[in-house]
Image: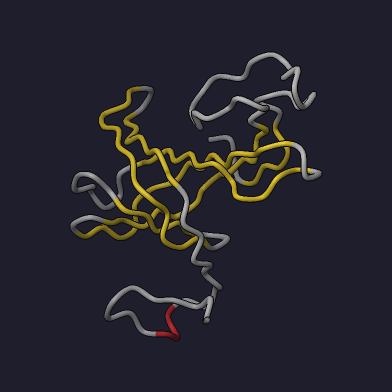
Length: 143
């Protein structure tokens, strides 16, 4: 199975980054300044180091600033669940799916009961000793 995929009608030479077919539940928020203008859920279709393609519940506008959150399929030290939080903007949108250019991302721990990717950081889980909300890796500017 190939890990390289393209949008329909997309030229193979246009994008050199590898995109991986990781399918996870995703929650998204359209952000305008400090306000959230829309929310939804979907599934990731592909992820690369610079973009995430996912299904959407409603049409999204190209250029719209987005916040995405998803549970990460790998565990830290085989004991601690993780989530990936992404801030970016929509670079491609069509009915039922969109692609977000990643401006900033952060891997965070979820703890034993961290099911909600947008949940606020909490106390250390007594089951795993893994503190929910602990930032593990960041990339991007803080602006």
